[in-house]
Length: 410
Image (cartoon, rainbow, N blue to C red; front, side, top):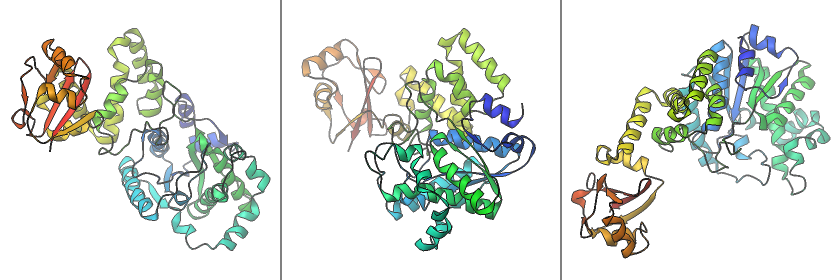
């Protein structure tokens, strides 16, 4: 398969602009760009799917430009329901640095990374109206889906103007770098076509674009910060173990799609994996391979093996083989409770809201349903102290088979 055919096979092309885009991608070596606004200090798995598409183009021989929107990030593109919260310049610059580092790592330093603030900051308002606004009809802007959906509830002038700035970005990159193609998620189609229109009107030349479908989970939710289910690419925000757990629990119905989108496995390899998975879905081989490929590509083989090790330790209940850093990472989202001195286990279970009453606590203990750092506790007089804590700091309590709680000594 040539590049365009493979992108289609992987489900990575939704909208296209340019009659001979297939030839451009398959037979020429062109410069293209993908962009994002630094609304957080890390990219997430939703961005990663698009970045991998850009990486596929790069691996094929096309030249990538990754744009981080220092200017557009100060405004925020229109959301379907309400205006984005404006972030400070200080926070934006911090976010911008974090994203640049991640992009550099993903592309092994081979991508040109640009910031649209660098060419917007010295442009005055009158020049912007003359050089950009004059070429884009208001009726054309109102027809954009994302703008049209906000007309009833209201849209600010700043949000309304966002598409002009992104269109100007494309024009700038077209003129400075001979960047002739933009590739983005499908929610950016309206902004992309503004850029195509601006380039045509100002230069008389054609540019190209394609969008990728937004990646959804089995419930139809997209991956993202606004959805509340972001899986960050920053290890300090989402550990390799957390990412492994999410991927290993991927719904069977999504495995084939995710293997195509998120991995560099060949079509033949993916077809073989899916076939074997469908024969024995309970073995979760597709999910295991998906986790291995994503974590290894993002964070390296060592992090993948670490995630695997932690998962095996927890499956066996051998908590004592985890160090403090791993415990904080693994259990950061479970119910936490702090104590400053030793405490009877029954009292602690009630105070930490692990059990609703002392009677219930005693019942769980005497029926071997409570473990402390992996050891079953059946003594209602057991005392929780630093001497039984991991690194004199952490107590991991498990109630039943799956409910974990973290106790911290101050």
